[in-house]
Length: 277
Image 1 (cartoon, rainbow, N blue to C red):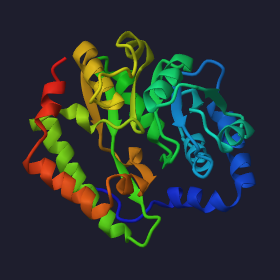
Image 2: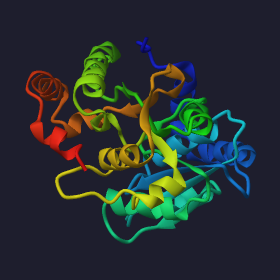
Image 3: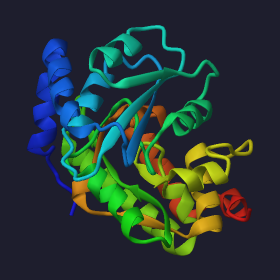
């Protein structure tokens, strides 16, 4: 079951946002225990002008509890603010990709990564303490799984009550279930909550995709068709928290809910066609 309220460990990270100095110090301390010279896992984060969000994201990731060695890579995609300076202050690796766009940024991160497993994250999301373990373990224990993907919940930053988003999220879960079993599962995959093996990702030419498709879903299709199945991680320990600006990108909560209802009863035929590589 999804949580109605924001979990305490996510609230703890949110409480640090008023003090960048404390955030930087916390990230440095946590990352020192997480990072090793020979990482098993690379967490890749594209970032464009994310100075308001990046430290909270890095704080949540660096606080992960895992037996695996981890590196975090931020891909600065031509930011004009202090994103790069803030990342470097934490001791976390920051590379620059001058070609604009999420596809170029994710490909640059994939190329720079040294881990066997790649986890895709975003600069405006908060990650639970067990996220790395939950997303990597299926890949590490089952060679038939080509990609893992998970769910997310919204952190209200406006006057909308959390309970409203809670109900909206269950509608989204229903859509994912229908996509998984009746339509095309790959459309469920989001770039900020998914994972795969680096060598397999490189073999299918990374995040490159044809016009009219998305980089994350298309990668999922390529990996599934070449190496195995997609694995949906439903454990709430892997539930990613993000601000409701994604809802705003859909035109607001009501418009976003309307879109999902329309897709529920009138699916886009193009989505099915794109599944046939």
